[in-house]
Length: 364
Image 1 (cartoon, rainbow, N blue to C red):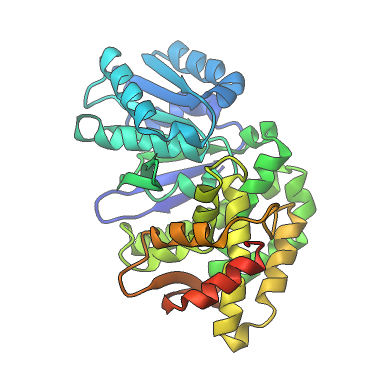
Image 2 (image 1 turned 30 degrees about the horizontal axis):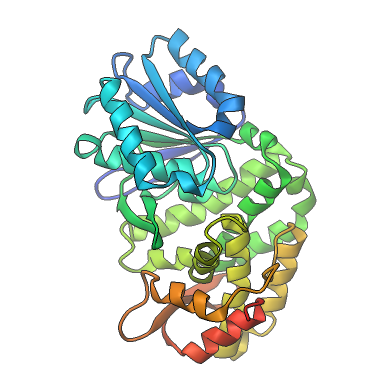
């Protein structure tokens, strides 16, 4: 088992990564200060529930914990106001109080949704992230929780740290290949923004990773999480450097929004977004020639798209970009890369350059 520590001014917590951790969940929760009389409320989705709900529920119940649960539909549509209100009602009906604990068992959608429920129920109760996807290595760390609005992604949210992250890499064995590949987009992103040696390691070990070798997956997750921890520890509430974690996300979120979150997974959209961001980086930083080609090659190795499957209207994508949280009255702000392994927040990006980048990734 690998362990990382997240040290923040108000709260610190650990990230545990390894095989067989869900089987040890009762002991791990007690190790984190959860007592048997503290009511647990587990939130998961209908796909994760098939594999893990009953074993986790039974293990906790047999260990003396009182546990209720809710199962929501799989997918981004569950990050909705309606689902949020329904879950709040179920917590009330279950008798949850300020000493209760929410367990977020699932991928990024469940972590975001359950975390936002925890942040707002009775002004905040404890919660733990129990990721079951590779993509969730990113979203489970750092305390950003949110739900969506019809006009934008993650519009209603908070910075609310978990009490711990317990990451059982064995859960990745039940992912579809598409879900696994999608998760590698965020893994690759962490290398591109922070650690060139990690990028090289990913090139060298792509076969073992795609074959789901637990030792290699554990190392990849640990190294990617270490980047996230290093950034979040400097900027918990995204007032500065933390925005670099949005590399590829500005365009990626626009792709997701324009397609109503139905055509591309989050990782696929971010993959295409990183190619667009790499191309803009090359135009603005002459020292970084070849970044787009290298980025595309690595993403392709992991089965990720580098262009839109079907052209999307350029103007619709631009409308979403104008609603991006980094956009201001003075212009567009993107996270761009002067060289592989480094990024910087770049303001006043010309609209013409952005439109060129969108056409490069297949907009029309």
